[in-house]
Image (cartoon, rainbow, N blue to C red; front, side, top):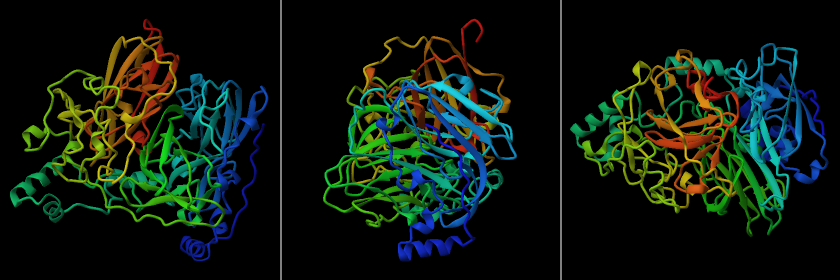
Length: 612
């Protein structure tokens, strides 16, 4: 099987407003979809039957620059085989893949196979695993496929990912898939800006809240908290010391972003067809640069069957939050309705991506209104509530992974399933237990705050979802499906703090940006270790480790799930077990693109202990 690059047809210039008005008024989705790659127009997954044979699967990918119609506007985009997103790649577990990637840009580029286990030389991180792909050159990636599931791929060069160098990837299992469905679709979520990403970053460096038009005032504080004047002023000063505001949910908002589903603005109405009574698999991929999404299908329950490509024990829910770079597979069984809206609302409620499940093309269903903006809380500050008149306390535990096993196999408390979020200060109902307190090290000038108390937040709903009147997936719900847990206890622990200075737009681990660190983090080849992540900042950080699984310690013993990307909530302490079984140099970073670019990046070196 070979996919060849092809020239991308050009269209005459037209304004974004006119395109969207035309699509909305006349249902002219073709005006918005005509420039999409063929796969994105229906996003169907072919399946194992299309991959018969044992020979290597060969692909040709060409990275170039095109002028495209995107979201109703004309843009210069970086493309893969002429489209945004790039082509849907389907591989098969147990086969070898060969991918020839040609660079038609005038700057170096790369492709990283996100979440795929492979030799480090094939991982696609410039100047770490390979030199990068120079202009005019072709690089051949070649490796065996050892896993199955839903993944994606993207550039790891500068800010190219933001400009369109990304695409979906589905690996079919060697044997029969345990999840049997009648239809199978990719739902690729992304954030698009018509601005140059370097301009976006420059603005953030000069004014970190440049894109935040949902500012919080003292009047808001009175209204939300019903505080007296003195208490309100004290609260306002506490936020000022943090160099943050309760509305600092996302660095880049709908003021700059258009949110896309399979490359389409909502007016384009991506549609997945179904027949009544069918089981439909939706493979959600968050391929955005900076945006978390809250995903729901009003009137239609979803059964989560896989997370980050790995099968999980099925769990039914009505909504889930998907962090940048995560993937979730869900199965739905549409009922009598002819159409259902697939709603992906940005976490800060500044916009949304949407599509439709329908019995025939052209149908739509009502699109829910954007919900009220969420607000950060004292829990997100990591403040010791016992000293601030709050309702919570701490359990006095200081162990590095305290609380993870106490929750028990049933998840302990879906504490987030009934609480109240969105309070600027004092909102405690959904707060997970305190499992540790911060030490004396405040991580230097690269960090503006620390989490005085560190909470186990794995049972909490994502930011802004505590008040949702329906079921919401939490990390505690995830249990691995396979019975392949490594019973070896970890031989050592490594603790890293996620740190930053929002006002200066500096991001780091342990207060040091990447250019300031002395060398790689040492993993000893063959060891089993525990990685502990503490979020001292007030933002969510999706942390990604290349080349190895992180087994999230969420209280399920031998059923803890594997993940390649773990979102660490503000003020949270998270731990994961890792088998250091992949020798080489591996990237480890926050997957918020501008955070990684501004220093929240490290290198892990896996080598025998005597040389590590």
